[in-house]
Image 1 (cartoon, rainbow, N blue to C red):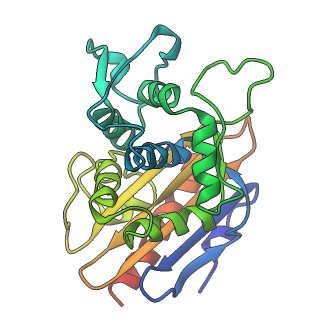
Image 2 (tube, rainbow, N blue to C red; image 1 turned 120 degrees about the vertical axis):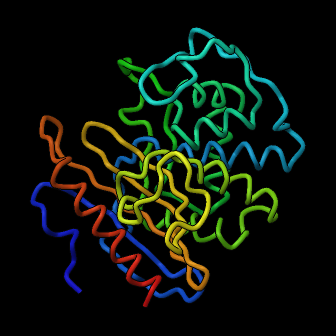
Image 3 (cartoon, helix red, strand yellow; image 1 turned 30 degrees about the vertical axis):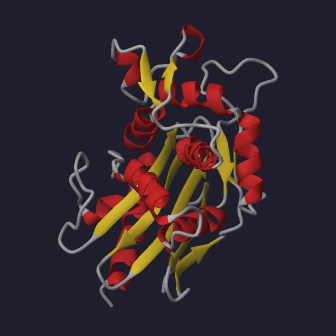
Length: 267
């Protein structure tokens, strides 16, 4: 099979897709390469919230009130809304569905970056992390990027989530439902042509649950794609140099990765 991830000079990829039930590797390219992943590590924030719920330290019904210090625009909806407080459950839904930056900052304030890091370490991951709040411009001394990670670790996370190895089955379904509301299906998921605003069901026999990350020099997508017979966990991350625009070249390769996954699901 031709390695589609070597076709673009000046673009670094980390990519991996595995059959969740057999371990068969659908594709792999530099799965241990650490890249910037933009909003991908918001997954670990949601994971930490559910772990705290299991420990009795957080209730999904708890209401969190946003502050001006946490306000950030761009991705999300909450900054456009009047409602000043939301439940943890609804904040998680905004993060999963729209990668909501304001909601992310409010939840980080409640949970703490240190607790998120502890939960990532407990997963056994050493190269993937959520580094900071959302803020712009980034002040001197702040982490240079929001998050980083490897396709190996994020595809592993998605496989474990699918297998209910991270939580009990009902808690796993909360996480899958948060991510399953994701409205960004522009990357790997685009091959499956789901309705971006409503796809938590089979579309032409395929189901996709995913989280994406987008920045000026980043496109990243990780998730689970499955039919009634097979399940694939995947992660595809792409980075390129500041001051260049490679989006129109990268996106077709992300879609092609979805095609390879679909081919395996129907093989």
